Length: 74
Image 1 (tube, rainbow, N blue to C red):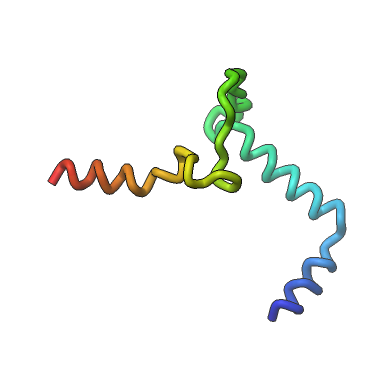
Image 2: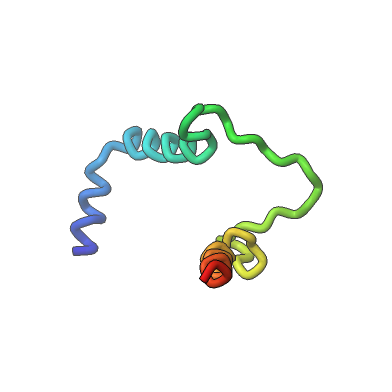
């Protein structure tokens, strides 16, 4: 099955693959409602991303925070 996917992926023209990558990149940079670019933070604080330093990333704590909020209401 894995080999079949690889073959099918190669059958797609390179410009189509590139346009999909660009489309996903554009969507990740823009507000889905207003379609305006998301603001870029220009502060001097180091940025923590979930794919590089997940233990320190605030996004990594979402599930834990939802549990705390849920437990505090019951």
